Image (cartoon, rainbow, N blue to C red; front, side, top):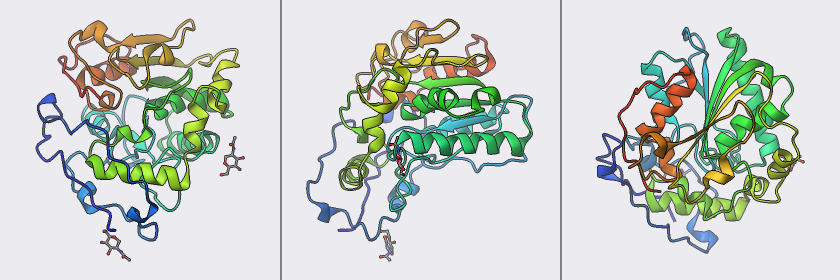
Length: 308
Ligand SMILES: *[C@@H]1O[C@H](CO)[C@@H](O)[C@H](O)[C@H]1NC(C)=O
Ligand SMILES: *[C@@H]1O[C@H](CO)[C@@H](O)[C@H](O)[C@H]1NC(C)=O
């Protein structure tokens, strides 16, 4: 069967709550036949979505501010998760860089699945590349979900990285043990068909990263056993929503001196944004910009994000 993707976000011009993609769970095909593993070309319907696509990595970009590396979540990729925030940061004068990490070779557009130790090394290499090629003294990192975990995990575990990163911003990271309601829940752009594909790839090829982050997994224990999760000199901000049912605030927050634990509803009480919605919500973008600029200006009015 041909891969086909529903285009649910045609009119999603403002990224506002007016035109939410359908948040109902994807029907998961049980048979492998519905995914043709001989042709896992990225579906046109996905790439033509207005929410698809990140800026190219332009190493000649110049900015007064640290370059920012953006890290997508589980089963997403650089083109579909923090890509809209990346365009916004570019408009604000930031040089931004992103990569798809943790994808299986067979399906390079579904990232974050391979084990997080391997991905952490790849991300560390990318951070070094960004620092070297831009000539910047330090790099900032913004990650969502699994990418938020990696924003904290990479400086903690990879040699030399904590020395070359400064601000770490994690949106809804599962630091203290995730419980999965379904890893494919992040796929809202392609709708149910895309989520079905992601789920099948996970079932057929595997998701070691899912095990790593789960309570009792490798990453869970690495954090639990760490003397200090956030390394000296690094400024970490954890951004969480009280309406995130996938990764609850107590799973995300890091109670160490100097860590800024921020709840969306403290500044935007009416925002019922959920886990996936953190990536597109301007209430959250404001908190991200504030973390990068170390201020509390209102750079966006409050928005009501996706409740999913
Ligand atoms: C693979 O799928 C894409 C998208 O459905 C299609 O355009 C392409 O022709 C297919 N390639 C092969 C070799 O079947
Ligand atoms: C991660 O996967 C690689 C293979 O890609 C393997 O060599 C390595 O042992 C795995 N590491 C962990 C901690 O699971």
